Amino acid sequence: MSLTQAPSPVRPKVLVARRIFPEGLARLEEHCEIDYNDQIHPLSNAELANRLADKQGALVTGSEQVGTQALSQASQLQIISNIAVGFNNFDVAALNAKHVFGTNTPDVLTDTTADMAFALLMATARRVCETEHWLRAGHWQNWELGGMLGVDVHHSTMGIIGMGRIGQAIAKRGLGFGMNILYHNRTQLDAATEQACQAQYVALETLLRQADHVVLVMPYSAASHHLIGREQLALMRPTATLINIARGGIVDDAALIEALQKKVIFAAGLDVYEGEPKLNPGFLTVPNVVLTPHIGSATAKTRHGMMNLAIDNLLAGLAGKRPPNLINPEIWKA
Ligand code: DGY
Image (cartoon, rainbow, N blue to C red):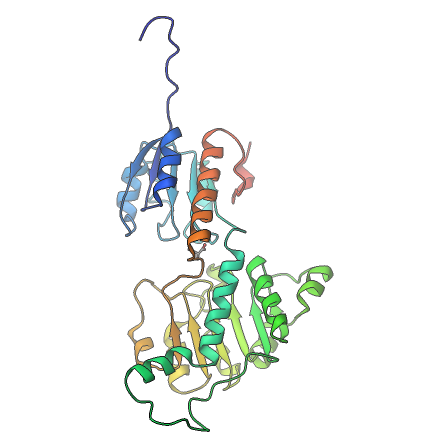
């Protein structure tokens, strides 16, 4: 370097904890020095801690657990960006203690995830997967008047638990099906939003008793752990369905399997599970459940949108700007 040349700026070190789309990596490489875990399985807490030790930033997914252990050696870390709207994998108190910003990816996945709730709802109510397996197994001999009867979605009552952006988008889809919409939420929505969704706020117990289809969309937390267990399932109608696109752990999976076996409810459609990607093997023994592998946001457009938003958040934070989707604003400029 000649004496007149300016020193090249120091590029922040960033951990990319999971495989991402190549254009995302290229975007990051323009600005940062990357430590890339080009794998589809998550790093263990110990590995995460090791690799965060010398980093200023990190891009993670909902499967990496960002808590005290992962942050234990992270003395230079400024920001961790989650490629997910849910951030129950972040221990916000641990982030705050280290003054590390956390971010998530809201909005870009709202409609795609609401579509998935409807896909599961339709498939579950009309036994789409069960009957397809039956057909493929060569059982179809005759059209039967009383064969493979499902339950109606149109003009039924949908009960949405968790009425944030995605819950509201599901409600609006329900209106197109002539559904009556009940909801339960931590706080009641303002009158204008209720009116836009034509949704009525009710107590949890009322919703469980009255809904033909119960859809779970709320965040996972200690308060929502096993919100739906044996007792709540018993309140539901024997003709009702339960759809979970929120998080594993909100439903007590063992209690649900028992309820499906005993026909306490008609059927369930699940995209998320306790301890996923492991699955309670009981689910594989009951026909009246539709099972998908946490694909709520999985369209090419939306997953690219999530990645790019997560990168926007990360680069903003590394540049000292307030990230657009900061989950712990309490430490901003604190
Ligand atoms: C989300 O964005 O929270 C999805 O569930 C993916 O983790």
